[in-house]
Every structure is written in structure tokens, then in C-alpha cells.
Length: 158
Image 1: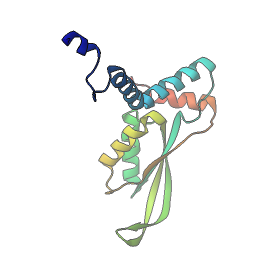
Image 2: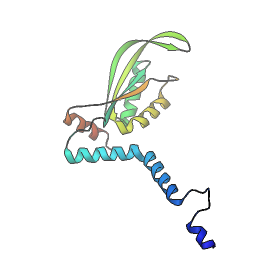
Image 3: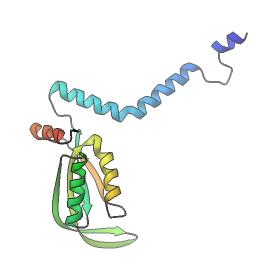
Image 4: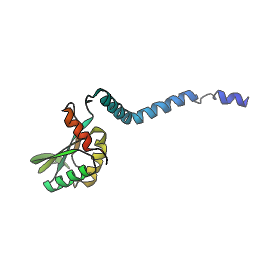
């Protein structure tokens, strides 16, 4: 009878097929971002068209121009982006610890692959002097194909 119990689970125990299905679902959920990126790259390579959302613009505020230049150079050196614009001073008003604050800030517009946004954000948080730097991204919907190809080439590893 023991060999029979190995084929039929005890009452209250999940069947092996249920466990396998749960494992497949969990694995699919965890690898979805990577699979989506690979699928988008494959689609783009085959059709020669741009897939919306493949690239993003990341916004980062900085307290002064020197810090903005330092962060921009570091991000480019690490191949986390292909291009960074440093926009001149902007007046900023914001809530900080329950008070309205006012400051002058420099804005970085960082062009990168959407797949690199998480690494870029993590790196900026490490090197940025603010306790909570402003780091957010917007996906690029459309763009000049040659420019977007240039962005890709600018982030290729050596």
C-alpha cells in the first residue's frame, strides 16, 4: 500500500499538479519584467519599429550646478544613460517636514532605457546629497528612430 500512497496524496495535501502550477505562475510573475523587455527588443529588431516605453526620461533635482554635473557624468560613465540635459535654475516650492519650503534647484533630464531606470534611481539615491531626492521617470511614447538608436548605442557596454 505504501507505493500507492506515493501516487495519490493524503487527504488535505495539495496534489503535485497544483504545486507545479503555482510554481509556474510564481516564476512567470517574477520574471515578467525581464521577459517583457526581451520580447520588446525582439519585436523591435524584427519589425524595425520603435516600441513605446522602451526608453524613459528620468527627472532628478539637484541643489546646485556642480552636483548636477557630477551626477550627470557619473551616470554616463556607468552607462546608466546615454544623454543628460542640465536645465538652469528653477524655483521650487514643496512641503518638507510639515512646512512649505522654497529653494532654487537644477533639473537633470536623463535619457535611458526603461530597463535601466531602477538601477539609475538606486545609484542616484546613493550619491545624491538630499535625504529624499526627486527621482521619477516617464516612458517615451514616440521619437525619432535614429535618435533612439543613438540612445541604445550610447548605453552599450564596452
